[in-house]
Picture 1: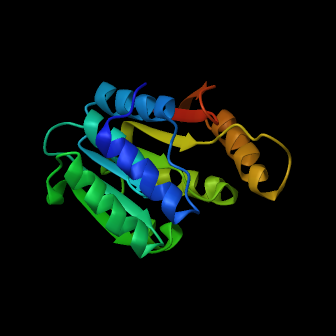
Picture 2: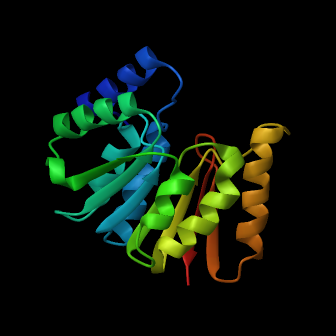
Length: 189
C-alpha cells in the first residue's frame, strides 16, 4: 500500500510530535476495506493520533458518514483536523472528542455504530472491547490494532486478555490478520 500526500503528512506530523505511531499502510488498507465492506456510516475511533487511521476509515466509509474519534491530546486533534481537511473531508465528517475513552464512550449511543476501531493503550483493550460491543449494531465490526503481543509484559497482557475474551464470546465472529502488529477484527452477531 502506498500512502498519498495527506497520509504522509499525518505520518510526518506524528514523527515530529512523538508519542504516537500511525497505523501501518497495510493496517490502514484493512481498515478502509472493513469500513467499505459493511458500508459504514458511523464509526468510533479510540485513539485519534495525528489522523492517519481516521483518513483510512473515512475513505472506506459511505459518503456523508461521520467518524467519531476520541483522544486525550488536544494537539493530536488539531493535527488530525488538518489531515482530514488535506485529504478532502468536510469538517462535519469528523467529530473529535477530547477525553479519556472510558469516560467518553458511555455517553455514546448503544447500537448506533457500524465499526469501532481501537488503537490506544493496549492495557485497556479488554475494557474497550466491552464498551465497543455496547456501541456496535448487530453486524458491526470491532477492530483492534497491534493485537499481536510481541512479548509478555503489562501492556501486552491487555492484548492477550482481549484475544481470550474475543475467542470466548459467542456473539463474535473473530479474525486475526497477521499484518503490521496484528489486526484483530470481530463481527458482532
